[in-house]
Image 1 (cartoon, rainbow, N blue to C red):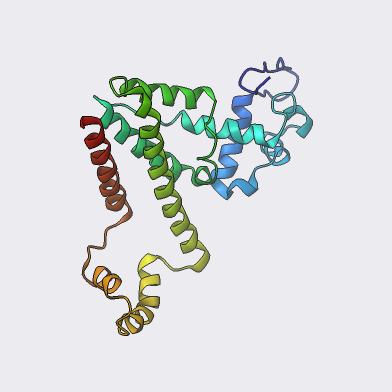
Image 2 (cartoon, helix red, strand yellow):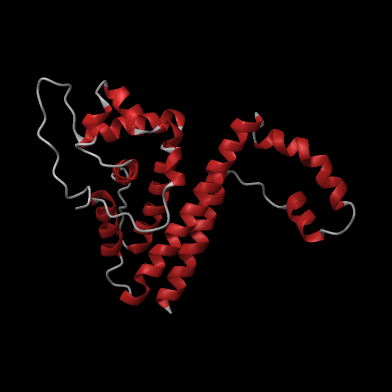
Length: 226
C-alpha cells in the first residue's frame, strides 16, 4: 500500500501531537534552510521533539518522506488561465516559482511522474485545459513544457549554488574570465560565439525564461493549429 493510501496511526494525546503533515512540514523547513542533506527521519524527529521511532508509524522510509515533500510543494503549483496557452504558461511560471522557494526541489523533479494527490490535481488542471487538443499529442505537449521548465530552473539553481561556492556573482565571474575570452576570441577560431557574446543582448534569468517559454508555446500553437 502506497503512502498516499496507508492510514495514519491514531494520535496519542499524552505525547507531542504528530501527523504526516507535521512531519512533512518540518522536513521542508529543514530542506529549505540547509538542503536535502539536512533531511533524515532522525533530524526531522529532533525538530519535532519526538523519538525517531514514532515517525515510522507515519512514514516507512526516507524515500516516502521525499515523495511527500515533493507533493506538498506541488500543492503550491496551481495552473490557471483561460485556454491551454495561458494554463501552460501558468504551469511553467508557478513551477519555476516553487523551485526558487524550495531550491532542493530542483534535485527531485523530473523522472517518473509524481503520483501524490497534489501532483495529480496539478496534472488534471493542465490536461483539462488541453481538452480540445488531439489526445495523441497532449502528453508530448505537457512533457515538452515540463522539460523546458526543469532544464531552465536547474540551470538557474546551479548558478545560485556556484555563486555561494565561489563567492562570485555572475557579473564578478564575467569580469574574472572576460580577459581569457577576449584572448581566445582574438585567435579568430570562434567568430560566431564572439559576435554573440560581444553584440547580443545580455538578458537576466527572468527575461531568458520568458522568451524561451514564448518560443516553445509558439511552436506548440503552430503544431496544434496546423
